[in-house]
Image (tube, rainbow, N blue to C red; front, side, top):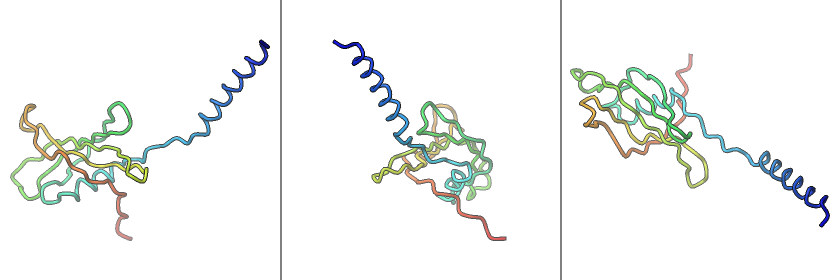
Length: 135
């Protein structure tokens, strides 16, 4: 067996792997901004949810989930104190292979660690924040 052939094949495979690795487009996930998340939280159930303060995002391992911590008030009940909620956003792939962020739950443990209060099993798509009023 010719030793140069094995070496050439190895170099060819290495170059092919490098080429394919560089040529495959990376599927970067769409960004989830605080403004878009807060806009969705303020508009999906306006009788019960109004964001008073947006604390920020936590991203668990992986990049297809984000948890936003927000202080939420109930605008229809002025006597109820605002509570800290965890808004879970999930990055999902639609049938047309585009990816979009969805609000999938909004819960709090304000009544104690063993009691979850809020909304589970939601499916509200995050849309771009509408432009502000013209000045």
